[in-house]
Length: 593
Image (cartoon, rainbow, N blue to C red; front, side, top):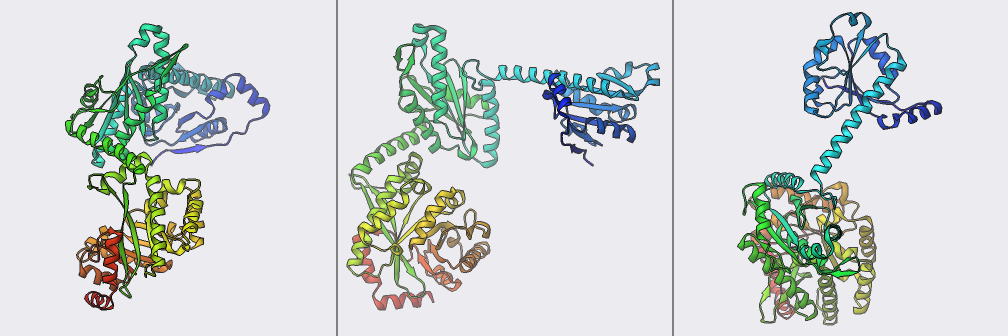
């Protein structure tokens, strides 16, 4: 049985409260007191005396797991809890954890020496209330002074004096914790160490200028961090940055490195002079470059190349190659936006009931000047990380709507074009007006456009983002949840979303014919869609057997390589003319029936 915590409201007269404030009682108000009192009358007396100001723990069963500031015991409880209390005090050393022993006056005649190793204060019964409270306050004051001193010493031992950042000792502890967490998640840990050349500052401005530069550089580094990053100062001119395991990946690491380089490129003002400081970055990874915490930190330090100040240098040559590819891709991506190197490809979506193409998904492709295509998997994550995705997505929406307008003039049967948007797109202040303007400019009605957003974005979206999507949905624009079923699918939030369509993730379609679990999940998604009167799209269909099975389950729309891969507009129009042939439609329908 665990000890019970009794928290009592404070009910103190103004006069008494003023007195207690004067004698420092405010500092200890709310302290946690353990009452290990065997006699019920004495327990009731103490409870009445203490309950207005303290949290009381009574009937403790496991003292080792109870956090308290003062223990009050009697002689009978002493026998029961002596060893547990002594162990607790030993583990708190050198910080005082006071123990008060209540004993009858007659016991004062006996030898008290056996109690001295554990007990810090004695109080005799019957208890004088004023004297008792004075002794309680005295012990708690001593306790909190010791705690404050301990915390101060710990802070001084674990933090940099100049910047206030945690130091190398805390860095090693944090990296150890990060490695343990990453091991559970089967993740790689990337450690960033950056060095700033402060030698010239010291020569010119001495310690004062050195400290001022360190503070400025530390603040700039802190300003670049996300909530997932932690910064440490290792030495006078060296800092370390570590990211939580859930976000500790190469893409984020390179993004942070670039942010650091950009921040440190700005000159530092010391007195009346502007000083340019060179920053070199080294990166290591666990477990690829090291087998323990010290080694991974040393590897990052050793990776620093003072001559290389524009890009990070990796301890692992393989990672260095990946990093350079990332940096080059980002550079080319920024150029591609201005040089019109993007193009739209279209993948048809087939109505299961009629076999006709009712809609398409517009997918962006990046073609280099030499004619080679860059895989979306190589540039979309970089675009999302750098914020370039918003410019790309807006181009996609404009191009898709212009294409839809042409198709309407050509009297094609396509009723809707779907485009992917991200949370970054929706968060733009003018997102709704941008969509409105594009539709108006191209003279196409809202139902001709569908916005696809991943499930996780919906779940984590801010309320104002959902309000924007609700406005667009009310205008008649379709809103689809992409990759549905992979994240947060539930009734508890689905009914609140302004959506019209659920896209069943391809991971369930791949093994729909062999996995009972995937069948069950797909059937559940279809039940949700039916309940909320939503359309369903199965993406990633690759075989006639999959198509036939999904049609029987009741899926509305089919999409996948079985029907057609994404293709440029000219190729798509040829495919469409061929597919919409009545005989071909009838043949395809008979194949999947």
